Image (cartoon, rainbow, N blue to C red; front, side, top):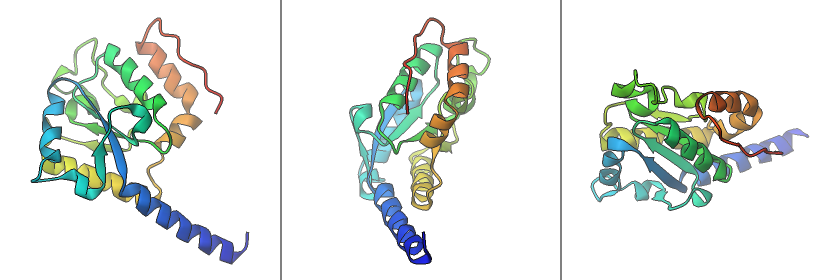
Length: 182
């Protein structure tokens, strides 16, 4: 590849990153109290649609999986299934302290403590519960990562699938996981 081809490729990557970052379809997976801060971010005061975010109904239509609230073992199974149904490129946003480290349920036997051991997380939004301003800030961080080509959680998942599968099988018993041939 000569220098001219590399320059053209860089421009194409910049345009692609800009287009992807400003047209993101989001699947919100809310458990517990975590989901209560998402509707205010969609209202006219914050209006995340003007920044390129739109809520979707199914994983097959979504680019971003926004996980809010605590995750129990049963809900982790559904999160993994939803994540694997999403088309690439796909991104994960962990929203709230419960999703990040178990929150106030950290010592429960049935609470998932570190989501990034089961699926890759691109952006963390801290707080219990994060205000809409924090949600928007986290979504802007995701957009910047996409523009720069740094949001590569799906590629990391594919490359380290055995490690993720091992962690998933430790907590999810008696679940036959599909085999992939990527």
